[in-house]
Structures are given as C-alpha cells and as structure tokens.
Length: 635
Image (cartoon, rainbow, N blue to C red; front, top):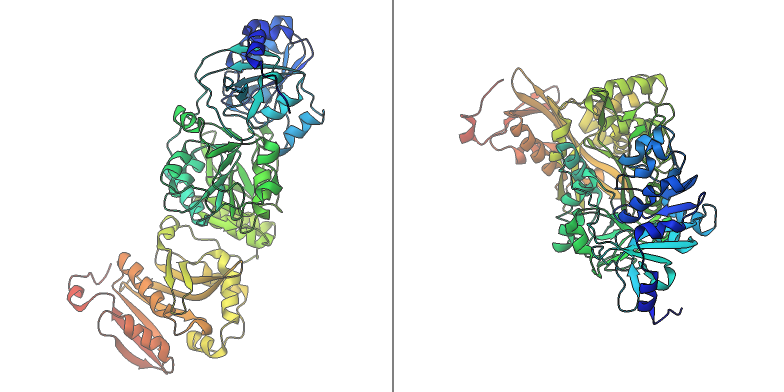
C-alpha cells in the first residue's frame, strides 16, 4: 500500500469550509454520518442548513449524541433518517414515522456497506489531525464508521484537534479523503449517572459471576458502571467489548484490568467506540493499552469466543417466563436497538468458560405505576432480541439464575425467584395456568430476600475442596432430589427417622420454599464439572413462643467427616444469633453418633438432653453461659 509522501500539499488542496463541503451532496444520495461522540458537528449543521437544496436524501447513522436537526418535521421531504440504534434524540421521530429503524446485529452492519446492500454515496466523519505520515485516527468511533468511509464514493472529514488519537485498526490516510474542514470543538460527552441501590445490587450479583482472569464486555449505563465498581477486588481481568466508558479507568489504574491472562490480544483493551466524559477521552488519547477495531471484528461472535472466560453483560427491557428477552422495544414502541447484544451473547456462549449475562432491574415505572419486567408473556408487538435458546444468565437486584439447558418449568421458577416479591404470586399463578409448573406449585416467599445474599460464605473442607454455602432457593428442587438419591439408606433414615424411598415434587418443593422470616435453610454446594451440586443442607425453624429454633442437617455420605457438618451448624448458629434466636433444639436418633457429636461440639455451653421414643431431644443455648443471663428469653 503506497501513499503520497506529499500529503501536506494534498491536505491544503482538500481544505474547505463546511458549507462548501456539503455542496457536493446531490439529491437522492445516501449520506452516512459519523457515530456517537464522533459525530461531525459542523458538517451536520451545514447539511441541515442546505436542506432547502436537497430532497429524498437518506441519512444513515448508528447513534447520535447531537440534536439531530435533520429529524425535525420541516425536513421530512428533504431527509429520511435511518438508524441502526435508537437514541433519545431520534426516538420520537421513529415512533411518528418520520425516521426509520433498521434492526440488525452490529457485527453485520459493515457487510451491508461493503457488499452494497446499503450503499453509501457520501460519508461525513470526524477524525484527528494527521500524524507525520499523513494518517488520521477515527478517534472515539471506529465501529461502523471505518467500513462506511471505505465504502463511500465521497468522503468529507471534519478535522478536530480535540479528538483523541486512538490506536488499533483506527486510521485513514489523507489520500482516502476527498474534502477536509477544520473545526476545533469539544467532543460530545456522555455523563456518568450515579448508581442507585438497585443498580449496585445488580452489579454485585454480576461481579460474583466474574472469575479472576476473565475477559469482560460491558455496555453503557448505571448497571455496567455498577458492575465495574464491584470488580475492584478482582485480578487480571481483560476487556473485549464494543464500547468503553469512564468506569474502566479506575480498574486499569488499580491493576484490576491488565489483560495479562487474555487468550486474544493479551495486554490490550479491545473496543470499537467510546462514550464518556472528557476524562475518558484524555485517558484514551495515544494510549497503546487500547486497540479500536471496526465492528466486523470486535463484534464477530467467533472472534469474541476466542477469549477464554468471556463474560458478556447486556441489558434488557423485558423477559418472559420462558426466557425470551426483549431489548429493543416496549411492546410496539421501538425504544433502542439490537446493537451488539446477540453478537456478545453468542460469542460468550462459545467461549471456554464463558458466561453470557442479561441484566435488568426487576421492575419499571410505566404511567406512574410499578410493573414487573419479568412477565408471563411479552407485550404484544415486543421484539425478541435474545431467544430462548441463546439466553444463559439473567440477573436482577434479587439474584442471578442460569437458564441455559433448563426446562420451561425450571426457567419459570428461576425467573420468579429473582422477580420483585410484589409480583411473584401473580407470576406463579400465570405459570400454573399455562402449565409451566406443577398445579400445586407453592408461591415463592419474598420476605427477607434482599438480605440473603449476605449469608453466602465459602469453606475449605478437610479434603481441600471449596464448599460454597448459600441460602436454599426454589430452583434447588432438583438439586435436593439429587442429594436425597445420592445418600445411603442409612443416612436418610438417620435424618428423617424412616426409610424414605422417594423424594417427589410434593415433598421436595416444601424443602426449598422457605419462609425466611422465621426459618432458614443453607446448602453447601460444590462444582462437579460445569454443574453445581448440593452436598449438605441445614435448616432451622423458630418457635415464636420460646424464641428457640428446631435445627437439623444432612451431609452426603462421601462428604461426612470432612468438617462440613460442623461448619454448617456454626453458620446456622451465627445467623440465628443475629436474628435474636436464643437457642436450638434438635431431635437425634440414639444411633446417630455423628450428629450428636457435631451438636455437642458446636454448642457454646452445656447441652440438655432427654430420651424420647428412641431419640435424644437436645436443647442448648446459642450463647456462652456468662452471656446467657443478658440474652432475652422470648419475643
């Protein structure tokens, strides 16, 4: 590839004014306008001013942060705006039919230009001043701008010295530009919105899914920013995303994001565009840590999948109980766009150890009323962006659920579990009526769910395996059944006082549907391959009359004598003390020496026992004897 060494002379010969630059745009031509924060502001203003001399010009764009004057009704006969993503400033025009929306995966947009399916006559772009070799950087928006520019018959560039010079596949030579204007103006900024409590809780749940050494993709908004904030305790993260925002700066400065364990573009942050504040733009300027690529590369699912442990986080507007995700419309009202959601969902799904995540608040305010974003069925006219077959993790402020490979019944139960408590009964009734769940399926309790995430802990068993302890969930029904059938007959007899032969739904569902106001059930889980299994369960139920709680636990045979039972009882005691419970009672068969030993070992003081029909009835305080005198004995 050869370029004219006399590019400086070329530069001067191509230099003109914004008004003269748009004079060459003819009626009926298709005009591409640079994206996002890199929208060429002077050229757009000049184009709008020339509107009286144009007709039937299609303006092609991905997202505008400007005022978009060409969408005003007075230009309806002059310009027809066509966007691949609907922003605030064009949403009204699209809904009123004065502008078009083209739904398409972002990775495929460049091919539309290059193959001529969406031909570009003129490209209006904003770039940096040329370097000593005559190369200009596309700056904060490479995305689809590069493909549109390379496909256009006429390229008009707005040179802005305030545009940060970004690296990667981010350059165009003066040779490739037909006309130039100079315009020093601030780059559009996208302000950081402070996260509310809901966004922060969603961020915590997502951060728990991210392992050290993962590569992450985030969008823009309060939820992605909250996720980035919650990742400050992680190590060696990488980034492969379609966009970067301000939240990434601190992670890089603290060494959390260093890309040292990336399997593709090691040590680099890969992106296609940036939206943020001036602080972000200054950070990006000539920073070799960042590599900007066009969307046909950054968003290619097969490229994305080459990143091991790829975690892709994308937003949704609504999801139904079968796992259909609506992300671009509110019923028939087009709201945003497909963007790169499916590209990254599918890329992360193909990644070794990857986790595709859909995140959203559990509710929204519509016409002054709170509604559930998790619904029995999508609104009429709603568009499915991520299908039932593509969906994996779904996260709200009430938790995370993995839907991949799960039945409709399991999906419905999981989604109801992370729905807002005010809507769970309504959703369960709808699920029963549609035969998604058993006709006798109990309603998932909602009380106390917000505090349950604080009860999760990890314990290294005596065999060296990490056991994760957490509150039991309604979706654990098959895991509880699996635990039951993997225990010996003797273990089952010692726990249930009879030789139970089966653990049907009618029994199992009551073991996993816990009223956390007066009861608690904790399970110990381990990973067997890619599957979570329960190896222990313990529970207590408070008697309000005495403020004592009945306690019991079960440990799978191959996990007994490894410290699991003792840790489980100690955790139950710790939580019970925090709930104001003063003591435990337990009924233990005389021959169940292991359980008797654990209770005597864990009790802070003496254990009172009496024999009743072949079993010991144990009673002990949760406090040391010297503390007991100060402890309230009842409610």
